[in-house]
Length: 100
Image (cartoon, rainbow, N blue to C red; front, side):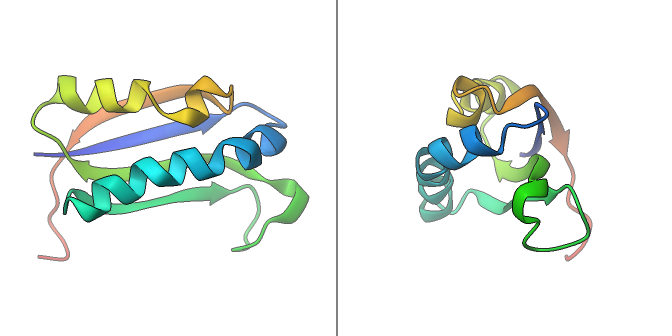
């Protein structure tokens, strides 16, 4: 089943995000190479693909896991969480309707 993983950033966490980005992306690339990643990306604080110093407000990941517990366990090991970037992470089942 698919799950949405939504991380909400702490204010002013851009420096911590930059330091832990490589480890965060490595885990996403592992999901992708296993055919489990649907999409992933950050939410810019401003209406721009490159928000500069404005930074990000969080991230969204849609991926396939065997269970809600497996998705939660994976999310709990995110380097952004360990680095203090995320103040909150929500994991929910997700039903893709479109694109079909």
